[in-house]
Amino acid sequence: MARKKKKAPKVKKPSGLYRTEIGKSGLNWSYLGYVTDEFLVQLRGSQGIKVYREMSDNDSIVGACLHAIRQIIRETRWTVKPADPNRKIKDDEDAQFLEENMRSMTHMWSDFISEAMSMFIYGWAWFEQVFTLRKDGKVVWKKIPLRAQSSLERWEMLDNGETVGIWQRPPPSFDLKYIPLRKSILLRTESRANNPEGRSILRNAYRSWYFRKGLEEIEAIGAERDLVGIPTITLPEGMKTEGDENEVAINWAKKILSNIRVDEQDGILLPHGWEFKLVSSPGAKQVDVSAIINRYAKEIAISMLAQFIMLGMERTGSYALAKELIDMFYVSLEGFADYIAGAFNRQAVDLLFRLNGKSGPLPYIVHTPIRRQAIRDMADYVAKLIGVEAIALNDELRNYLKRYARLTEYSEART
Image (cartoon, rainbow, N blue to C red):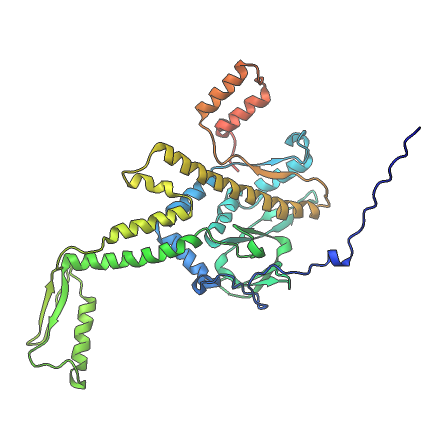
């Protein structure tokens, strides 16, 4: 007896209740377009941008950590993969077109990656896609320039907290300009509550940086006082420190005490009866300021997963420990590079092909691994696999190994 075919279950279309967005992201922001999710006022908006700029430009530990991040990510190579993994780039017109766009902009692709890494400092980076029409009628990228974080005026956001654009006041004219998100690229280190400002990787280092900065200034002042002595002025006998008749003289003496410096041009002319001298420091300090400063420096490096840069500054530490720390650092950078590639493919590559009337599966941009094995280890591994006939040495493997060792870059221009 023939079995009856089961009817496919009917798929119910979602009703209006399920299609309607009821909740909101929960991000703290005002209808004026200002995000106030940061609980420290000094790190909000333009104030926060200035603080993070000072941290990245003035602090040696923060600068070293950021330099390590930038140089490692800049060392990666970015290539195009066809939508169909079984096809090669040269056989895929769309992949060729995307690769041509990467190489034919008015700036290099590496410049875009370099500016994209400004999101590590400020938590976000905004790029405007500028297109032009090629002679063959295709729309191509002319450039993808960064819109500096310092030019931010406010955000354009919908009622549910979704960002749809940015308002900026760029110098030198400081005219108000609006850039919609649909022709832009927004990169963020984090997207918690859909915050357009992301979260700076320097955020957790701020407290340690703040105290370290203050202690360094105190240490410098203390060192100067220890070397040259504490300036002291003795007033003439019988001169009162209170009263309008002596106020000018007392203020003049205070100004001398605060501004005196011992150098080749020092010298003071005092009225009759006044006495000036430098009092030496009474002895050793009870608090080791240098140890506290070094502790804060470690905390800054730890907050950025770059504590390995401190290993050579002390007697402690081992190769195994350094390797574990570096591996963790590389894993975090791998995640950031994956995010940059994914965000670019979704926001830029998709728009490029839509403007050219192309939809469906599209080619995409990928990067080489951040963490690279030593060439000697790779060669030994491949030799062993070939020895047991686990793999065969063919042209594809040869080309991959040459690219891995970057032997082909001597004759090829870098992107």
